[in-house]
Image (cartoon, rainbow, N blue to C red; front, side, top):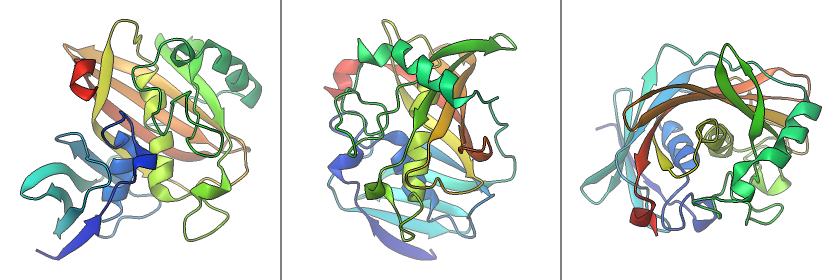
Length: 247
């Protein structure tokens, strides 16, 4: 055992009302994987919903970080070599237009989600509203814009905190799936940050559906800066669940 550190997931960073946003929680844990940083990929597996406002512990051993709630494993993160392939981007004006087609504005399983909840106030949640755009290679795609609020800064007041960047890479993948009549939650995310998003700069986030295996869905997402450079990219595994389990 190389270390044991505390981790608390603030209620601000919820996905469902009672548990942490998967992307934020995964990014917070990934920051504990030894020798991980910009340009390196980490894979995080969520074994159970991350509890909010609760004292958790992070155990690191070799290149693995484990998030513990008492003796229960909440999530594990490990270093990986292969990085996700970027989803083709779209122009900011196309992404802005797509936001009016965001299905979550009409029907959202978790309307207070830190990343994509429409009931979060400006400057509180990310308010990512990914709507459909033209398909590429027959893969359904969604896109939206995102201008990070100063409250999301990390140690550098001009840059977003890394777990927030992971959150931005989370939900746009989910909304590339047709969620009418179904609810999915994050089971695994593999992500790499090539840079940190800049506060006050308009970014574009795109998500793409990669395939389905029973109740598992595979998606990808990419975050672009104002110059259309890749800031971060991710691939996800989602599981269809009974939404009553999170009510």
